[in-house]
Image (tube, rainbow, N blue to C red; front, top):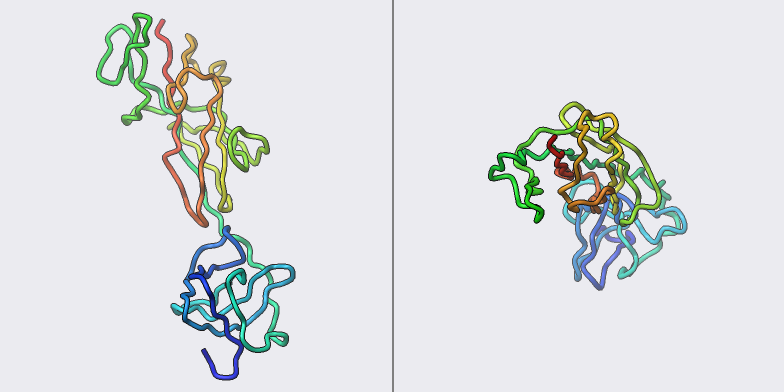
Length: 220
């Protein structure tokens, strides 16, 4: 810290972030026993101040929950809250490679004398034209944020998402336009359920992939 400048110390090791809260990337850490110069204030009512990053690099936002400020910060500038970093969620809807009449290693018995896909993605082809939605918060879904449709490879992607918990939902309504005219059922993540949801936690600026859904079409 700089002599005569206001400083911050903490009673519990505390992260320093690119903005105020969990939606922002961790850019440094404030250790117990250390002291960092306070360079700006956050707009009210944010319980943060901006400090010189203890590890170097850009100034960062320090949470005041476990902090003590020494010195006068009243004349320091107030910084606007930056826009949170955004990431994405992506995956695919795959078509199980299981021939009921000639079952191979990617098939399992369905208990009724037939076979169906094993619910494990093994590089199979995707299904185009499947509609999906992303919802904010935990499953079951309540608040829809955006919709997407799988491309020619069965892949989908939701962009511009802040850090948080999301629920991705799809269902079997694509059957009417998919050309899979004999029907079928989902095998992953929930076998046999016509509506599928999966819950995902997204970190700040994270691009998370591999959010997949499996479908087994019935043979003629």
